[in-house]
Length: 398
Image 1 (cartoon, rainbow, N blue to C red):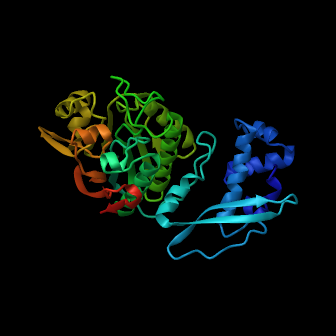
Image 2: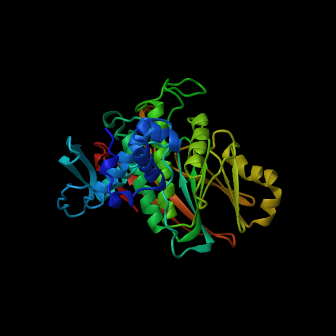
Image 3: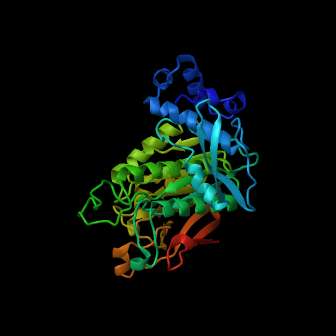
């Protein structure tokens, strides 16, 4: 059904440039297929999604769809998904509302991005006050999106939905407490996705993995979440750099994630997606030298010597030198001559295999802040505690 006639001028004004272009094309040409071809979309269904999303957005902005009544929200709640039926004459029929807590609204925000390949990135207003002498690095250790854990077996439930909730909540908290640095780095330290294909086995040894869903869904949700993190960070920082490190669980998908995010943010000058295929990534900020890698190829004890040999000129210019990695799902620091190697923990709990081996670590996400003079000026930790009965009662503790 062609819904473009439901888009009033007030609703039209809420749309992104791409949504407006689709509405204009459908009105001009009369069909979704013709509109899709004109504006360069993949299919008629994609064009229809643009208009449906615009109508849903209007429904969330105080009932701007003609004939849509509003209802009072409970204290501490936000308006979530709104579902409507359309009568034959184009009027609104029945309306269903979903009210969510503010934390749940973070999850709902992902539903606004239905097609990760076609929809352009949102425009986020520049923050008013930032400090160019400071750098905030959001270190995201092995998230293992689409890993499955059952609380009766491991003490904690974990799946794709819980992983999404945990990371969005952690980053919202850390961004809120970080310094207002002009530049921020979102550092995905690898193994963002638990498996690389639908065999649900490790690539190297073929070991079975406890999986929640298909690889297509896992990759799609990971793209949505990572892009949402960038959008959140842009509200605090003028420039956001993203590095997706290749892990041992997601070697090819880490590459695909880089290309997807680069395409999604291609028109936003404030966002830089680092595209190097190398296992190690270097960044220089004043007298601060950072290297990021996953940790499965280069042994932690060798990282600082490797930094000095691989980038001797950068090494010589800097006073503070840090090698940052994940892979081991635990915190550790190795002091070396001239630098420090730090392993970051993660938010994902044990799967059945790691639980049976007795592994234990704190579940956390960390933002480390630096001054360009060559000093770490502080850090913010978000620690996650799962009740033993499962993650319906997940609580974040600062």
